[in-house]
Structures are given as structure tokens and as C-alpha cells.
Length: 212
Image (cartoon, rainbow, N blue to C red; front, top):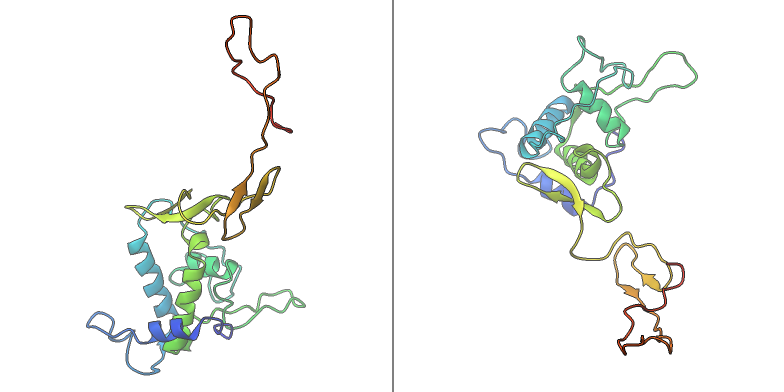
């Protein structure tokens, strides 16, 4: 897991100091005691699936057996082959060895029995959290939507609160970057001189905005 080194130190420390209890004594222990990667993976997947129980979240990623040569498709697959491949595609893990494109065979290895320190485990989890939207939803939310918690899990929904995001500039519209104010300017139009009909009532229409 040579790539596990890009998470803020405070987040690593926070996860690395989770106190053990009777249910995870072998998994979370004091110091830098090592734990097998496959055990980390099992805890992560089971934990998140317990939290995110919505049917769309539970959708399975089909195991192909073609990503890592030590993670095979059923019936020879190790535990959670589908998610191992999914995490690889999403950039959460690269495994322990890459494939040599100059050879016909696939040398990529995941090494599920590889021992990691708890600091490396914390980075793995934080990278997973960073990819949460892609991992546990049907894909990135559309422009103007955010991932919101529901009773059964998470779902993409319109964002009606907070900063204005996903705003495209147009006539009279400025601002609205990833975070910031957006300003909409209205042009002033005067009613034509003949805006009153013969009965003296004011017309109900005005000139349209350009481009409308």
C-alpha cells in the first residue's frame, strides 16, 4: 500500500487513536501493531454496509477477476473480490504490485494477507471516505445536487441551502463558483406608450428580456 500517504496528519492521528474494545481488540490495538489488509477491508465494508442500508447503496460491483491476479472471480474469489476491484477502479487502492504492460500476463497483486500498520489503515479509511459519494451511490451527483443522509442511507438530492454551487455564468448572472455569492441583475424596461387599451386598463405584458 505504497500510495497511502496523502491524508492530513490530524485525520490519521484521529483514526489511529481509536480505543480498542472487546469486539475489536485484535483489530484496533495500542501502538503500531500490524493487521492484515483483508481484515481491514472486511471491517470497512461490513461497517459501511451496516450504516448505509439503502438498496441502491447495497448494489454489488461484479467481480471480474481481471484486476489483480490474486483476487479471482467466483468460485475461487477471496472475500469481497467485488469491492476490492471497485476500490481499485475508484483510486482508493493500487494493491501491492502493478502490472507490467510489456507482458501478456497480469502481474498486478492486491496482497490481501499483507500486514499494515494502524496508520496505514487510517489512511485507507480516509481515502475511502473521500470517495464516499462514488463508492456508495449510483455515481457522482448531478450539478446542483449534493449527497444527503436519509433514514436508510445516502442519496443525491437538490441543494437548496448553503452556498450556491454549479452556477453557469450567463446574461446578467455573475459569481457562483464552488463557494460564493451569485448575483442576478435585472434589466429595467419601460412599457410602451400604447400600454393602455381603449378602456384605460394597463397592459399586462412588457418587452421580453434579450435571449429569452
